[in-house]
Image 1 (cartoon, one colour):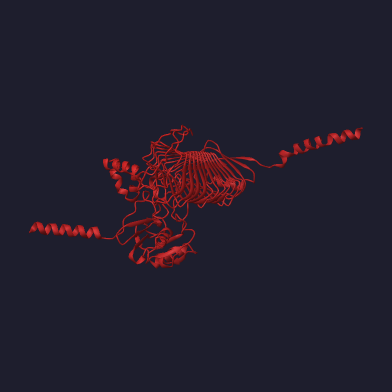
Image 2 (cartoon, chains in turn red, brown):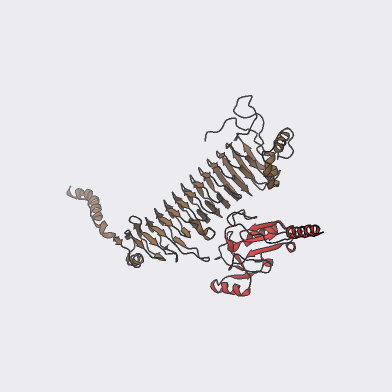
Length: 142
Length: 418
């Protein structure tokens, strides 16, 4: 009986872990962008898609993720979209909710010039030093 | 009689008299500069246009040095300009400046500005040569520069903070550059071109950089010849450009999951000739390219000689040697809009009955297992197993998986002497 219990718990744990769709860390300097094939190097601009099966696609620039979703005509409501927070690049935030800022001084790898931050406060903080940065959101990004 | 004699002599005398005035007309002086508090910048401020500054040996702890007039700056026995990890070091904003023989080291690091050891900004006809740049975020940074020469510099960085490092030679919105004879290592990209047109990159050595040895983005009508790119994170990337000529380069030992000798992405009307691809994971990777001539190259001991994606069209592969590659060619589709002819393939086992040097049966360079591993990458575990041996043989008799349009109708029996 005890053994059966043990096996069921083990099995259910395995089941839970295998089905979890979650963010997968990016191995910087080793992995290539799924769209432009460039090596992902710059933490500040990295982003990632997790699709409904849990498969991940990693990108070096928000513009690559944008092009990837439109070219592959993916259903965005089925996807988890992550983007690195510019001011704390090890933290990945939901790209659909993030505040995006666009300016040429953000020298992103593919010239998208887009960064993402989590709060309006940090957006204002960056706009304080970069005056011409425009605020955008993922859904109105082309 | 006397009159005509004067008339003959006059031009000579006039020229001699004018020549005697010449040294007086040019006021350029040579000024010796010694280490001291901001002595370099003070010397620049005091100097007049066309003067020569001779920097004497020693350590100059200065940064944000601005050269804003036409000067010649010569370092004597490599004086050291040390930025002490604070900021950028030398700015050149005037035309026709010559900067040579300095050792420039230790720029600052910043996430917003690109910290450069030597920055040429909005200037033309500048020469930066025979310098050493050590431990900088960016080595030599050209911004809106034209007709500028970067020659025989040694640019090194330690890759301890490799993710935030910058590029060795970085050019942005420039035209008519010559980048020659430099040795670049330990940076993010060895040489980086973005919006640079009509420029030449020759006889440079770019090695052990974290990302690419050479990186082209949106740069048209450029040429790179006789360079050597080895042991870089992922080789050389040429992207979103047209009219690029790549000749006589050596692509050596670029190993890794996403490493290529050359990565071509959205390239048009370009030439790849007389290059050597040796011991790379993928020698030449092509995606969304049009009209590329790939000829007279050596593909030797690579994992994949060429990976040409189905999105490529109108390219010709002629007179190349393929020797000792695990896979000669791989592709991801069945349509093939590119043409292979007159290549030498060491795996070709056809015959030449009429002895004209060309094989009588076509060669299919895409092996069945390269098709399988393209679809299921993990299937590579079974490579060289008994099962795959059988599959290869069956496929030779009854081709069903391999793209039958991808073939060389005129394979050479003997290796090209290149």
